Length: 310
Image (cartoon, rainbow, N blue to C red; front, side):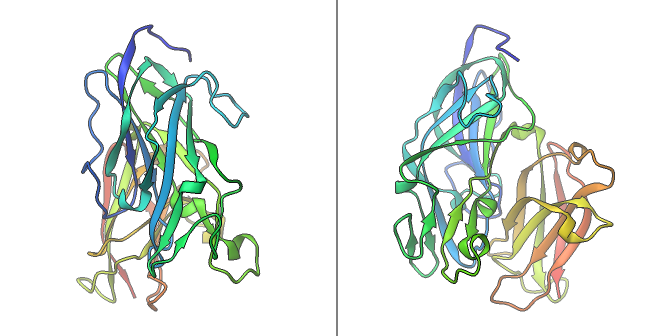
């Protein structure tokens, strides 16, 4: 759909993430106000017991009404932010956001969002102090050096009205950084391949799932850095038939919140539902737990309470 109105509206640009804990210059996704359109970027985690920081250098963000189907860039897009700075995606968790910049956009339905990153200025910091880059050992395979354009997936058009709107960029770290052993087996090094799994959406049209992971029994010891996987599939079928819709982790109190999930009504195939899998940190021996048939309703949060890992 092309722009419905010739008037341009102020746009506020933000960065966000979808996992529990963390800190930022904002504590929640801001409301849409007076012509401001928020643009956010979000992450979901991977091995939190190994990786301390996921630093991505964001050069600029572009948005357009033309999807440019099949292309790797945004057609007729407007530059909406030029942050030119490194951002730790793992510090933005549980729906928290950070400001990227301001711009103006005409009202319309937006079908394209592109993020330009600089891989030479991006890195992973491990908990043992090592910094992984495109030239380190172990290495991050960025599939190229310097600036790289990433086109976000958009499953539903993002509206910008006369009163503004919100564009959230959900950067799924858990699915974007893949251990090289999994990509090129039987490699034994501990590097990562960068795949860039990114989605742009209107956060008001999404929901979240929260809970607390504890050990052994109800009221037991909270488990920090437990892995949370949000799966989609037929709960009557085996887990290996499901796909991962999002990932997350627990904070120091065992709590997690996986934000910016599509409502359950999006999954059209009969029997498809959200299923949550909680795995203990790799340094422990607790068994995983699966909770089937979790419902997500926009813009609400679905609380699961305690999840006990035996």
